[in-house]
Amino acid sequence: MPSILVVEDKSAMQQMLSATLTSEGYEVDVASNGLEGISRARDKRYDLVLTDLKLPGADGLQVLSEVKENDPGASVIVMTAYATVENAVQAIKLGAFDFLTKPFDTDRLSILIKRALENRRLMAENILLREELAQSIGMTEIIGKSERMRQATELVQKVSVSDTTVLLLGESGTGKELFARAIHRLSPRKDGPYVTINCAAIPRELLENELFGSERGAFTSSVARKMGKFEIAEQGTIFLDEVGDMDISLQAKLLRVLQEKHFERLGGTKTINVNVRVIAASNMDLKEAIARRAFREDLYYRLSVFPIVIPPLRERRDDIPALAEYFIGRFSVEMKKRPVRLSKEALALLDRYHWPGNVRELENTIERAIILCEGKTITPEHLAIRLPSTSEIRLREGAGLKEVAAQAQAEAEKSLIKRVMAQTRGNKRKTAEILKIDYTTLFEKLKKYGLQPSREVVDVEPATARL
Picture 1 (cartoon, one colour):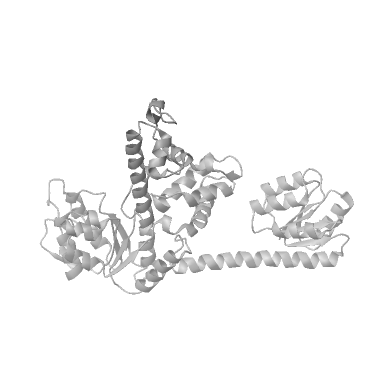
Picture 2 (cartoon, one colour):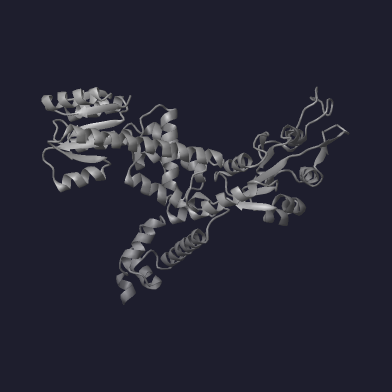
């Protein structure tokens, strides 16, 4: 039975609407003022809200705004005896389904309500269909419509249907494991096991045991036969995360498995055949590792049959709002807190930040903001991130050309200003002349780079200098 909230301060109209809607089979609640209507909409989700525009406490537009904020899918019809084009346009902009002018015929109201409820049903079905589609393509948790992400997801869908070995490349926190899991879910092996192991988190002597297993007595603490991850992943997929950190001696055994599809357990002599798809991932430059003999070149070419580069968050900024909304919704449910929204200032800060930790850092930032936020809106203060000055940016693996250029320019400027300031004994005006910039620009750069002249600094040349 669909539920309807009627917010109307005139008792006669309230009773008429309640009786009419109840007779048509709806569950009806009533509120006599705007604040009561807002309170009821917070405590209960209604399929439709029918609200007057002129109300004591809070007007109908405030009721509309609050209802849509708490439940974006709710249908709201605004009624008024004082209709104006401005009011109607404002109500539609805020998300009202329709604007109804009093007096109105109950038959017309009945038709309008049925249309509004049908619209809500279709919206809900559309959401379910999108979720089912996302589940069917194995990318429920991969969020992003930017061009770089679209290209990456297209590659995932193309390679998934085969047994080709895939190498996922990207910085830490970009979501390589989500892509690996999506490839498995899309593949013919989706009903087989999906096994993941972080090669950087396990010491070399233990990693070999984890990957290939061991026989009883293979080493001191080996009291029973142990199956390795490759055996466990039989007929499925094994994901080797951070494969670039694997010890060089262990890489030879991995290469043999890729080439020959068999291996022996530690301490064993029996050959074990395996039918496993391998997906590997690395956040390091493997070609550079090859150059310094830290990674086998033959293994690299075995792993990189089909490389996919996952872009860092700073190169897919169009996806930040959608990712932030996803994390807000997830953490609000987990923490049992009412949904909140990002202020324009907070969203602008998220867009300007350089995200060295990528999507994982954004996730942690939103989780902390949900904990700190006690109202309806996340502000910059809740985000606890700071935009570094140019001089604070440190070059890192994967830095873009613009970032490298900005860093180099900042360091060059800072060094030159310090040298000229020393030559002029802190005379800012003379320094500005030598650098061919105006005094204000020099002052701003001194402040930007944290260059504080000594107390001997003067703004004009000493009198003796002019003689």
